[in-house]
Image 1 (cartoon, rainbow, N blue to C red):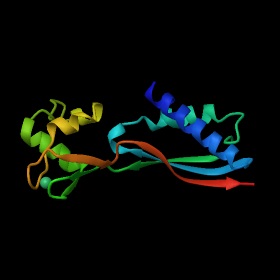
Image 2: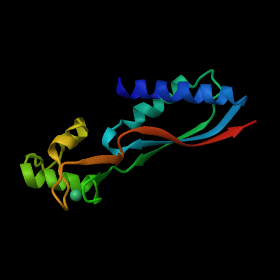
Image 3: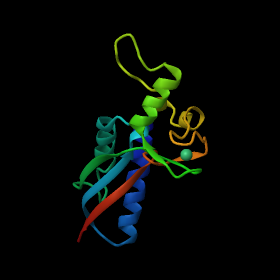
Image 4: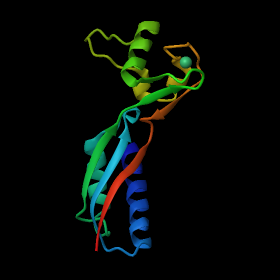
Length: 145
Ligand SMILES: [Zn+2]
C-alpha cells in the first residue's frame, strides 16, 4: 500500500540519518505531506509506529501536518491553491457534483491530471507547476543524546 511504502521510505531515511550522526535517540519528528497526495494519515501513523519498533526512532513523537497545494504559472507568475483548482475544474467540466452532493475531484486520485486539466486562472497558460503539496518530507526533527 501507498502509505506503507511511504512510511518505510521515511523510517529508513531517518534511521540512516540518525545513525550517521551518531545519535541514539530521536525525540520528535514532524512530517509534512502534500494535500494532493490524499493520504490516509491513520494508516500512515500506524505504519510508522510499527516500523520504528526496535530502531533509534522508537519512542519518538511523530506529527503529521498537511502541506497545502500551491500551483504557480511559469508564464505570468500567478499562484493559486487547490480550492481554486477545484473550482476551475468544476466550472470547466461540470464533473464534480455528485448526486449525493459530495464533491470529488479527479485531482485527488491522479495528481498528474492537474497538468492536463488545469490552466492559469490569470493568463490561461498551461505552463505551470505544482510548487507544493505533491510530496512528503521531514520538516523538523529533534534529536536526543
Ligand atoms: Zn499565468
